[in-house]
Image (cartoon, rainbow, N blue to C red; front, top):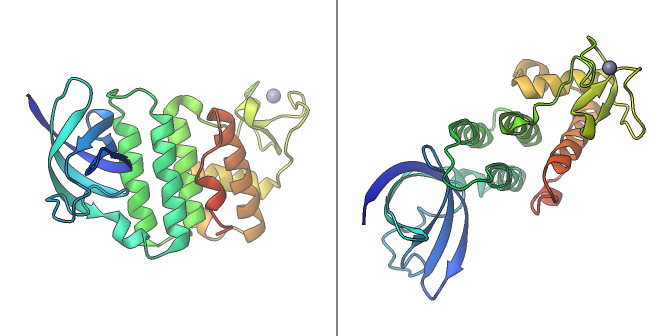
Length: 243
Ligand SMILES: [Zn+2]
């Protein structure tokens, strides 16, 4: 069977037969790949904990008719070891893994930008320089943008009229001017809209000093926007505390 190598983040695993697992990976060059790890559930497995969720691994795989098989795994960064010790970072990180899998819908469709965003997001989450909820919100907005759902927090999402605007609707794709405003709009504070723009841009000096009230409001709107674009809500999102 032809072999290939790639780097990946382990998104999820599930049991297969007695000792094996199916591992869902977001790879650098092959997009989302589901592959079999044989014998991984035995205590003597040569893979050890290298194929647990969050691990950034260097892999060798053998192409299969349906599923590929992992033949080698070398840990690059064990993000799970850092995140596992902190409930807030762990739950926020879990949402990142689930979102990455949901937004890259086509298996084996290369998604380098999503891959780089996820690795960068996990690195920021593990480093602990910013609040976990802010790292998550920034990651969600940026991965939605990469997936083609870039929200507008400046100009009106419908007519382009220059902002600032303070009516927001997930269905409209961002903020709306007074003319374009539609029923059911959220009416966030101007500071919240500014914070959303900073989260999308990764403007950390602005994000880090934002008021708790505006951060809470911004995260609620990010969640609404994410859920609007995913067919159903995320399993892991309700676990995220108000960080
Ligand atoms: Zn408008």
